[in-house]
Length: 125
Image 1 (cartoon, rainbow, N blue to C red):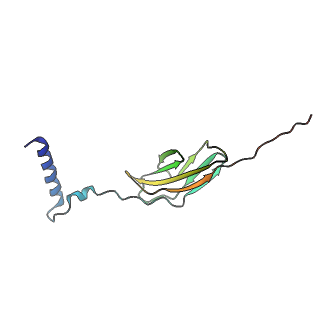
Image 2: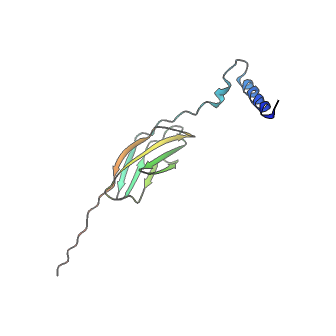
């Protein structure tokens, strides 16, 4: 018997031993972590060229992924601030909850940064 076969046999014996006398599924130990619910009550506030996303905490979420167009990041907080955006521009933003390697569906919306007012001065001569 080769070393790899001995190791595989030991793993099978250990898993069957874990299943117990009732013959439960030894692979149940490796059941997937549940997918978290998507964040809800997603709101966005705009101030000049800054967009701040806020959402309600998701039960048992360990982190949140956020995106704005081609940018993404991960945070443990329930809000995220995007700064330095173009004025008077529309962006697609979103957030999803994470629990380990599992992620919820995205909660997203569209936001438009403030356009501001043009400032003109006319000098008299």
